Amino acid sequence: MQKSIAFFDFDGTITTKDTMLELARFKSGSVSYLLGMFIISPWLIAMKMGTVSKQKAKEKLLAYFFGDTDLDTFNNYCINFNKKKLPSLIKKQAMVAIKNHRENNIAVVIVSASAENWVAPWCKENNLQFICTRLKIKNNKITGELDGENCNGNEKVCRIKELFNLADFDNIYCYGDTAGDEMMLGLATHAYYRPFKQ
Image (cartoon, rainbow, N blue to C red; front, side, top):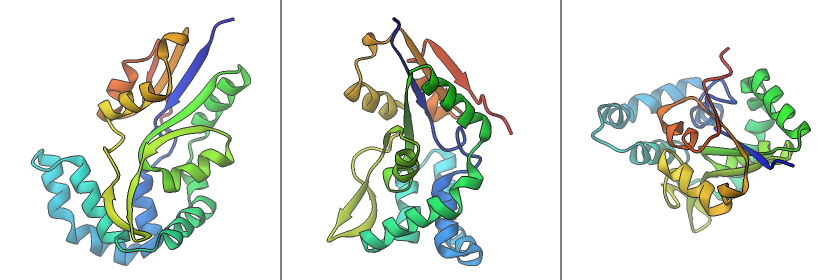
């Protein structure tokens, strides 16, 4: 019997929007969110221009909206976000693909640059494995910094290979929607780029 595994990007592939931004909006409210995005816009513009790394820009955003937040409080934000907002962002076609893989005894792993704090609850609810960015915690508070590398681009490949011997699999399915997924898609025997258009 052939052994298979499927790796899914999360933001933009399974969801309709970037969940980090949606979590920030959910926590802050629309007015405060827009003000915050204006304040950190120089960092976001610099990222687009290639003069600041995605990781640094991401850390600035996380620090602005969540920095110095108690870990339990932050995790409660994430749980409430999962209950109240995230279901409306999930693409039905993506869930059909995940369901089809699982019905064919194919392991499904979510591989995301978003933090495990808000991706893990959804994955656990759906009995899915996950590989995500980790957030640095100091004195039991969110610092805004990442713990290690942003799980994007080559880091997705590195993290996958840390956990799985891909030579064991006859079929490797990969789903992604941005340049940050291209290296992961390169691992696939069956690659799907932007497969679930709304």
